[in-house]
Length: 377
Image 1 (cartoon, helix red, strand yellow):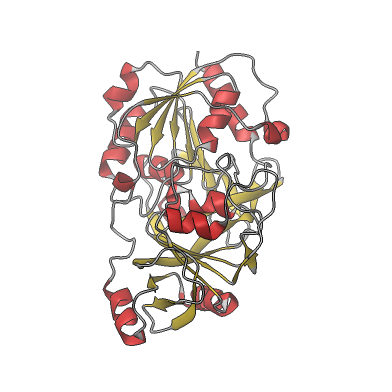
Image 2: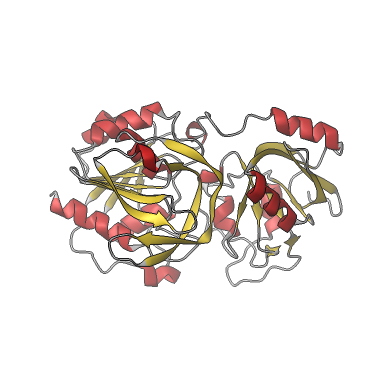
């Protein structure tokens, strides 16, 4: 049940403690404290598996005003370790809403608080970097909470993908929601069989692939190259997912074996893994890129795309091998936002063209994947 007025706390490893009011489940969770600049889409953010192991702070001052519905979720349940907002709307109103944000958080056992100075918290993260933290509604001792935050595992070196990969193979049927008619493709010339390696995939990705007429098979991200090739796909998709890419030796090895055998398209973690498999290295960003309003430059056309992003790691440009060329750049910090392999059919981006939530400037990349598969069949 929700406990109106019950105290809730967020403590950071640097010794900072923020006191607010609990709006979620009773309990305590550790995670890396990050912020997201989106004004809408909190439901998609909560259910994005890329947020596994993270306590997400929303920078927009009021969250929860459109409630929760079952059509816009990006996985079977919320994936965040904790949730922090300035103000939780007491009223929710939308023709599709089915329950309040607080009811949803409690039902899924997510610890969440409101009422803290989120601007101060975000400035601290921007200045000092993303930090390990504890969110709690059961421990009111600041010293105890800070000590727990400092002793929590963090993200670096952890394989969080194994916590979110599906257990079994799945044939995906669902297409894009009718409200996304403007993001639908005009391609539709030829359907293909796409095998997705699911490292924590948002569901709007297979919706885009299916909407283009493709047969979509989803495999756990732990699958081997042999398992992928045995399905005789026309193309292979590498999904987003949580955490540090470098510990994922099994995924890097699989992708290395697939390069040159089938067309490949990667998003977010999939972009990092494709780059690692090609010989690059990754590094941890100071506070990451998270929001539905991140500007990206398409290097070839000079076009600026407003994109949805969620990642704390990036590909190190000074390690980029000769076989990869940069196709996109993040305009906030000039980091690599996309690459293309020069000799085999493979490309990837460090953002989310499937949106959900976010702008649809980059949905053309799914059509480019269709063209890549068409050119190899």
